[in-house]
Structures are given as C-alpha cells and as structure tokens.
Image (tube, helix red, strand yellow):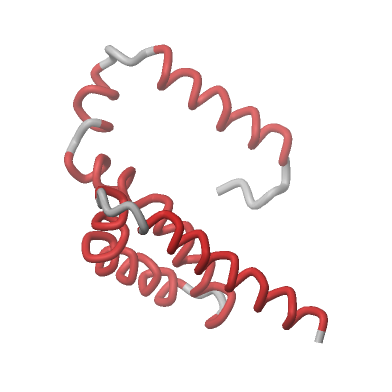
Length: 114
C-alpha cells in the first residue's frame, strides 16, 4: 500500500489499472481470475462491504480484527437484506427505503445541531 506518500502517482496507478482491465477484457486475467466465483461474490457485496466497514471503523475504531467483523457482517446481511430488497418487485419498497434514509439523515442533522 502506498500510504498516501505519492497521492498523484497512486491515483494515476489505479486509473491506468482500471483502463487496462476494461480494454483487455478478453485477456486471460479477466476471464479466469476476475470472472471466478470469489471475485464475482466480492463484486456483488462490495457496496455493502464499503458501508459496513465504514460503520465499524467509525464506532469501534480501525484495527484488523474489526475489519474482519465488517466483512463478516456484510456476508451475513447481504442475502437476507440487500439481495431481497434489490430483487423485490413490491411497489412500496423503494419509497420505504427512501423515507427511512431521510429520517436517518434528519436525525443526523438534528444531532449535529444540538
């Protein structure tokens, strides 16, 4: 890990790496490794992993075992919560989630003001 010593180089490296993966879509690395079940699963849970590890870092403080806790929480909650909501055809699910999010946002603003 670069540890932010050369931030511009780090950003350029990640952009060039992403461009290379996109442009070389028929390359063996993409077909064999990135298409494997493990990487596909990580791709599916990546947003949940991002959200949960942020919560774990914020409330418990960063440390390796707690990062593993965030990964475990994501793995446990992905199928029963996120996947069911994502594929749900219920007409009220999106408005309910939006309302819940707005309530949480309002509570956070109130907590900041108070």
